Image 1 (cartoon, rainbow, N blue to C red):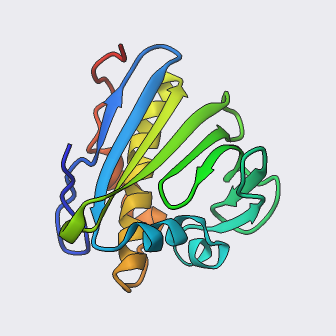
Image 2: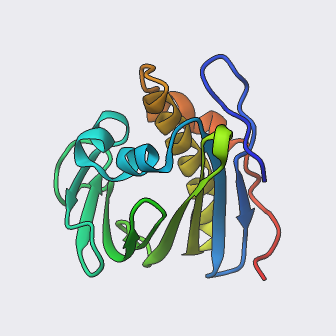
Length: 180
């Protein structure tokens, strides 16, 4: 799926494909950014940069390490903190995490960065092992994250989650194709 930018002033279009399947639903999001894989990797993994557009990143970003992404206030144990076990970390190409979010089963997040020459770098994010009920929210949520990352990379004021989430969630129907 080719992504259309959803910057300020542009109507949002879906960036993610949502596949449902009882306990094995998944979301796959693709978005291209006009930057190098190294710069995109840095924006996704360097704590100082992540804090500017998403939240506080703490921990050990290497295989076997644990990281916390604190998306609201920088408070351990809050209800908006993802605690992740790093399974694969291959800069600037691939990151795989076991994702633990309060009140949910452990799921899997895979991030790949694919250089596209003059077009920049494509981010491919796959969030799998989701319950059907969580998948739609993650589709909208990851779409917001992709938009906020775009704001950061473009040097714009990063739009807030609250300003974006409802419109992004509405792009993803409550039912979608079943995962195979």
